[in-house]
View 1 (cartoon, rainbow, N blue to C red):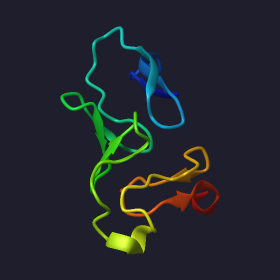
View 2 (spheres, rainbow, N blue to C red):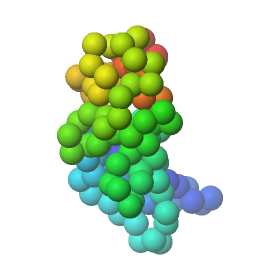
View 3 (cartoon, rainbow, N blue to C red):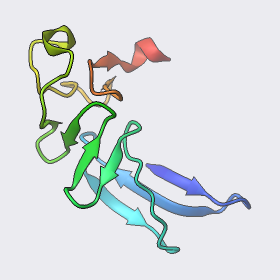
Length: 103
Protein backbone atom coordinates (compact mmCIF):
# COMPACT_ATOMS: atom_id res chain seq x y z
CA UNK A 1 0.00 0.00 0.00
CA UNK A 2 1.14 3.53 -0.81
CA UNK A 3 -0.29 6.65 0.81
CA UNK A 4 0.07 10.42 0.64
CA UNK A 5 -0.53 12.42 3.79
CA UNK A 6 -1.59 16.05 4.04
CA UNK A 7 0.05 18.58 6.38
CA UNK A 8 -2.27 17.50 9.21
CA UNK A 9 -1.32 13.83 8.91
CA UNK A 10 -4.54 12.74 7.22
CA UNK A 11 -4.45 10.31 4.30
CA UNK A 12 -5.12 12.36 1.16
CA UNK A 13 -4.54 9.50 -1.31
CA UNK A 14 -3.88 5.78 -1.00
CA UNK A 15 -3.35 2.94 -3.43
CA UNK A 16 -2.99 -0.81 -3.06
CA UNK A 17 -0.99 -2.86 -5.57
CA UNK A 18 -0.19 -6.50 -6.17
CA UNK A 19 3.42 -7.69 -6.26
CA UNK A 20 3.75 -6.92 -9.99
CA UNK A 21 2.49 -3.34 -9.65
CA UNK A 22 -1.10 -3.80 -10.82
CA UNK A 23 -3.42 -1.43 -8.98
CA UNK A 24 -5.97 -3.27 -6.84
CA UNK A 25 -7.60 -0.30 -5.12
CA UNK A 26 -7.32 3.48 -5.01
CA UNK A 27 -8.79 5.99 -2.55
CA UNK A 28 -8.53 9.49 -4.02
CA UNK A 29 -11.23 11.68 -2.44
CA UNK A 30 -9.43 14.93 -3.36
CA UNK A 31 -8.76 13.90 -7.01
CA UNK A 32 -5.00 14.30 -6.57
CA UNK A 33 -2.54 13.58 -9.37
CA UNK A 34 -0.21 10.97 -7.85
CA UNK A 35 2.01 9.36 -10.52
CA UNK A 36 4.37 7.35 -8.28
CA UNK A 37 4.00 3.61 -7.99
CA UNK A 38 6.18 0.71 -6.82
CA UNK A 39 9.27 1.15 -6.29
CA UNK A 40 9.61 4.76 -7.42
CA UNK A 41 7.99 4.07 -10.78
CA UNK A 42 6.10 6.89 -12.46
CA UNK A 43 2.70 5.97 -13.87
CA UNK A 44 1.94 7.10 -17.43
CA UNK A 45 -1.86 7.34 -17.53
CA UNK A 46 -1.94 7.59 -21.32
CA UNK A 47 -0.17 4.25 -21.94
CA UNK A 48 -0.86 2.48 -18.62
CA UNK A 49 2.87 1.80 -18.29
CA UNK A 50 5.30 2.60 -15.48
CA UNK A 51 8.49 4.54 -16.17
CA UNK A 52 11.57 3.34 -14.25
CA UNK A 53 13.92 6.19 -15.21
CA UNK A 54 15.59 4.17 -17.98
CA UNK A 55 12.74 2.21 -19.56
CA UNK A 56 9.05 1.34 -19.38
CA UNK A 57 7.53 -1.50 -17.35
CA UNK A 58 4.19 -3.18 -18.13
CA UNK A 59 2.58 -4.46 -14.90
CA UNK A 60 0.14 -6.65 -16.86
CA UNK A 61 3.05 -8.56 -18.44
CA UNK A 62 5.33 -8.31 -15.39
CA UNK A 63 8.25 -7.22 -17.57
CA UNK A 64 9.83 -4.26 -19.30
CA UNK A 65 8.71 -3.47 -22.84
CA UNK A 66 12.07 -2.04 -23.91
CA UNK A 67 15.49 -3.66 -23.80
CA UNK A 68 17.84 -3.11 -20.89
CA UNK A 69 20.03 -0.12 -21.88
CA UNK A 70 23.09 -1.77 -20.30
CA UNK A 71 22.59 -4.91 -22.38
CA UNK A 72 23.46 -8.30 -20.90
CA UNK A 73 25.26 -6.65 -17.97
CA UNK A 74 21.80 -6.33 -16.39
CA UNK A 75 21.10 -10.06 -16.69
CA UNK A 76 20.39 -12.77 -19.25
CA UNK A 77 17.00 -11.36 -20.29
CA UNK A 78 16.94 -7.88 -21.80
CA UNK A 79 13.28 -7.39 -20.78
CA UNK A 80 13.15 -9.08 -17.36
CA UNK A 81 11.83 -7.56 -14.17
CA UNK A 82 12.88 -9.31 -10.92
CA UNK A 83 11.50 -12.86 -10.94
CA UNK A 84 10.38 -12.40 -7.34
CA UNK A 85 9.06 -8.82 -7.06
CA UNK A 86 8.36 -9.29 -3.34
CA UNK A 87 12.07 -9.74 -2.54
CA UNK A 88 13.64 -8.06 -5.57
CA UNK A 89 13.38 -4.58 -7.09
CA UNK A 90 14.71 -2.73 -10.11
CA UNK A 91 13.93 0.96 -9.48
CA UNK A 92 16.24 2.26 -12.21
CA UNK A 93 15.32 -0.35 -14.82
CA UNK A 94 18.96 -1.42 -15.16
CA UNK A 95 19.42 -4.56 -13.06
CA UNK A 96 17.44 -6.30 -10.33
CA UNK A 97 18.58 -6.09 -6.72
CA UNK A 98 17.67 -8.19 -3.69
CA UNK A 99 15.67 -6.13 -1.18
CA UNK A 100 17.59 -7.75 1.70
CA UNK A 101 20.84 -6.31 0.31
CA UNK A 102 19.42 -2.79 0.25
CA UNK A 103 18.17 -2.75 3.84
